[in-house]
Image 1 (cartoon, helix red, strand yellow):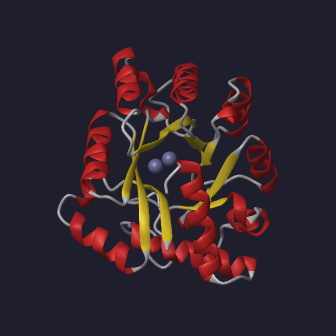
Image 2 (tube, helix red, strand yellow):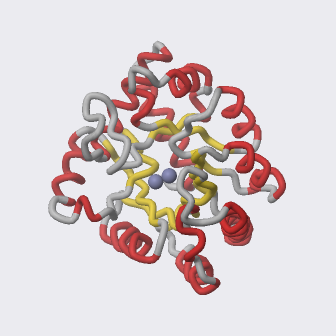
Length: 255
Ligand SMILES: [Zn+2]
Ligand SMILES: [Zn+2]
């Protein structure tokens, strides 16, 4: 049993073969997935998938790259949807300093608003971080995000930062990059993060693991992430699958 905690099956790239993609995932032992919506169209699609498939859950929020587009109505809409039993987390939210569509101060404001909403509706949060680690950690601390906790998704920082996040009630989620030959930090993090704090994800259609690097990613490949972590930790892939699935179900409050 594998749990892909971060998949964008609501992406355009699956519009022609979604059913096949889902069936391949199930064949590889992926028992659950969380589909992440981060703007109006992708949230709508994530909700639809979560309602149509028993084993799919939704995570909804506003992406930092598009922070500048989020209106008060959007936030209210997310709050209303968050009451649905298949919505298990808010996000992805955070900061992305790689792209400059949204100014930093607007990104920070939208991030803070979503953390406050998560505390209000009592859901964990999924953090997107690109080149913004210092500011992310500071905001999580200032906003008391520890109260809801959540996931550092597709974590690419150092083991020291991972530890700081774990101390704030966050799980560390690893994806395709841990399988890349030159990925020093994700491999160090895989070695050091204890099994009860680890999650796996694909972030598909992005970041396909080796040997599919550069191609379209899909939930079936989360098995390759689990295998790589098992090799690094020197344990069986079953042990990784079992621990990460247990962690995900606990965090998302899934039975
Ligand atoms: Zn992300
Ligand atoms: Zn994502």
